[in-house]
Every structure is written in structure tokens, then in C-alpha cells.
Image (cartoon, rainbow over all chains, first blue to last red; front, side):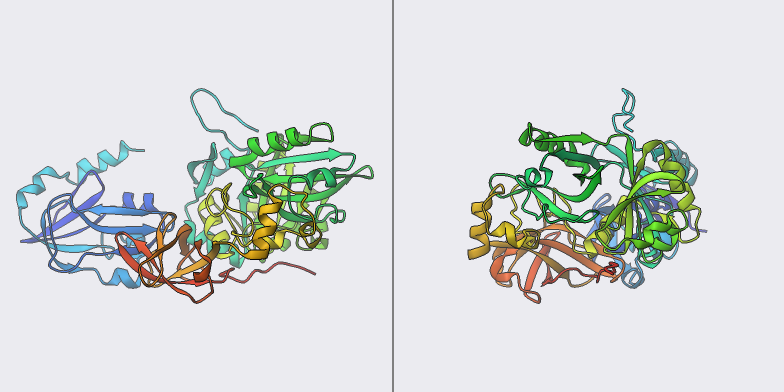
Amino acid sequence: MAERKYSEDHEWVEVDGESGVIGISDYAQEQLGDVVFVELPEIGKVFDQRDEAAVVESVKAAAEVYTPVSGEVIEVNEELNNDPSLVNTDAFGEGWFVKLKLTDPTELDDLMDEETYTTFVKGLS
Amino acid sequence: MANASPENEHLKTPLYDLHVAHGARMVPFAGYDMPVQYPAGIITEHKHTRAAAGLFDVSHMGQAILRGDDVAASFEKLVPGDIAGLEVGRMRYTLLLNDNGGIRDDLMATRIEENGVFALFLVVNAACKDADFAHIADALAGEAELERLDDRALLALQGPRAEEALAGFAPACRDLVFLEGGEMNVDGVSAFVTRSGYTGEDGFEISLPADRAAEIAEKLLALEAVEPIGLGARDSLRLEAGLCLYGHDIDETTTPVEADLTWTIGKRRRGSTDFPGAATILDQIAKGTARKRVGLTPQGRAPVREGAPIRDTNGEAIGQVTSGGFAPTLDRPIAMGYVASGHAAPGQALDIELRGRSVAAEAAAMPFVEPNYKRS
């Protein structure tokens, strides 16, 4: 069962073997409000940890999404072009953004696990 | 009405507790803590207003009554609108101008009658109210007196079911047509109600005592047709309606002619030079302006935002976006901005910069969504 890890910017990565799927957390989508557009990267783009990987446009403003891990883009969620609201309705599932081939899995140790992130979010309100 | 204290820097309207109780996300706006959205979200709130009835707290805006021996003539010294020609209960959108013909604020002015004497009920923008009221009082000192109504709240009820909703508490509202107002009781509370708003929909603005506002608001919200609407949807609604947001689409550097608001300058007023900046404005009416406010429709689905550079199809800079966002009614991005007059015709192709790349767009006529005003 793939474990989800979180960055302090509310991005998550779910690792499966050599690749990881990234998205934003439910807390993040709630803060953003209604998502109207997601700008996704091109397949093949290589990111370092914390590079800007995507941009989410809500009704009111744009927000950068930073990748929590380094990797090469192998897939993007095309469905978000049809229905950006998936980010709001299913942030951890169908609202995923990008699938990366991880270049440095040790980076996962920098990230928070589920419990730590939950505590972190509670501390923000 | 204002409750600022050392521990909270922002002012609160009389509906602050109501907003919080309804789950609003509060944000600072013009020095007030205001609801940007409720749990439903901006898009749902926007669509609800166009389908049913949305209730907005606009108590942060400035309300005042101007009185004087010839208050219409006095006020016409400050605005280019036809104020003297207003009949009792009629209202007008007009502009406070500076000596360069630029816009200090946009506002609504309603003719009221107090014991047979003509007075003006004014509603101005929250961010400008202190400056506006000081300006009006100073400029008209000795001939007119301004009374700020700081003990009153202002609610806006907008949408095709607004009349149905309000009529249950104020049957007289049915008799008002667009841009008409009158005193009436709302569930027994003495109020001044105008048929006007900032959404393009039929609806009302209700001025009432601050200490009764939450109670009346809750009664309206208890109706099935009415939902609370935040500032986020207020902005997307007015943008679809092609209405200006002061400080963004119009400001002290924009004249009414550049802003495509020449229609606010009545025919009689154009024949005289008795308003601030008249020489400049009349010259612009005669000869045109270098830039013009236009609607913009970007291709694709990404919104373009305030400040985005606009270029012609050759890459030459021709203007910038002053308001931009997403139009839920149209399911597409829309924007407003200023472009060089030669590129302002509806359908004119242009490019808008977004995150370092060009988005193809067109100049567009406004409103983007046809209004539903009840004119008769």
C-alpha cells in the first residue's frame, strides 16, 4: 500500500516503486477555493525538489505547486483540463497532478508522514 | 457599526458574527473583515445569485445624506451626472471627479424628499468613503451639509428571486423599478430600499439600522431561495456585468471617456463646463482618447489577471489588464483592461501575457452576460 508523504506547502507524493504521484492536500484545495484551471508541465520535464511543477488557478488567484521530490515527468493528469474541480472534490485521488520517475528517493525522508502532517495542519488553524 | 479595538485591527460590519456563524472565510477588505466566500464556494454562490437570490453584506460601504438649499446644483459641482433632473425616488450612477477629469470614486445618488425638501442619499465605495465624504463636505462647505449614516447597515439582495424573497417582508418593493428607491418597512423595520445593485441581476439594496441588520439578514437567509454570498462571487458577478471596480478599472488617472463611462455625462452637462476636469473631458469627447476600457476574452481556460501586459499581434505593448477572473456563467475566463484606442473594437485580436507566455485574446463588448433589470 503506497504511503503518502507531505511537504510544508501542502503538496503530497504517493510512491509506487520508482515513481510517485504528486498532488495537493485537501487542506490546500480548501484554502484555494474553486479551482478553474491547472497548468501542468510537459512530459519529460525534469524537476529538482521544490521546483515549481504546476500552477493552480482558483477564481481569485494563481498558486504555485512545488514538487516535494525530484524527478522526471512521465505522466500528467489530462482529466484536469476537462474538469479542474477534481482538485477540490478529490484532492487525494482523481485530483492528482503529475506522475514523476523519482531521481532521489532519499528525499522522502525530508517529508512529513500522514500523522505528522495532520498535526501540522491542526496547528495552522 | 465599527468595532475596531487594539487586538483586532480590522473593522467589523454589523453582520460579522452572522458571517462567522454561516461558515464564512473572512478576509481583510478596505479595512474591514469581510466574507470572501462561504462553504458553498465562489462558483456555487455566483451561480446561485443568477438562478435564485443572493444576499450580500455591503455595510462596509459609505452611506450619507447631503442636504442644502439647492443640493442638486451643489452636488453637480462635483459630478458630471444629471442630478437636478432626478425625480423623487430616482437614482443615478455617477462619478466624483478631480480637476484633471480623473475619477475619485463611483457612487449611487438617490433623490429623497424629507418634509418636502430635496436631499440626496449617497452610497460610495468603502475604500474611498472617508476621502469622499471629506471632499464633499469641504468642497460644498457653506452651501450643503453631509450627514454620514454610520449607524446604518447595507444589504444587497440580488437575483431573479430577490423580489419574491423581499416581498414577503416588504411588499412595497414590488412597486419599485430599476434605479428607483423608497422608504418602506422590512418586516416592520424602517428601511430605505432601492432597486439596484452590482451584479447585473434584478435586486435590491436595503439600508437599515445597524442594530436590526443581522436579524433581517437571518430572516432572508431562512428563505429557501436565499443564500449568503461573499465578496469573491460579488467580484465575478460584477465582472460578468461589465461593471467597474474602483481602484482597479477606474481611478484618479482615468477619465470617464477613457473608461467608456461617457454615458454618465448627461446631455445638459456636456453643454457646460461646470464640473471638475470638464475642459479635458469635453475635449476627449470631441477628439477621442489614446486608450479605452474594453472587455477581454482570453482563449483557453486560464484566467488573466490585473496587471497583465496586453500586446497587439505584432508584439507591441498596447495596454494592460485591470480586472480578470473566471466567469462561472460563461464557464470561461474574462477580463477588463485598457488598450490603445485603435485596438479597442470588439473582435480585435490581441495577446495577453500570462506567466511569460502569450495567451491569444479578443477585445469584447460588455456586459459579458446580459442584465436582467426590471425596467417596467
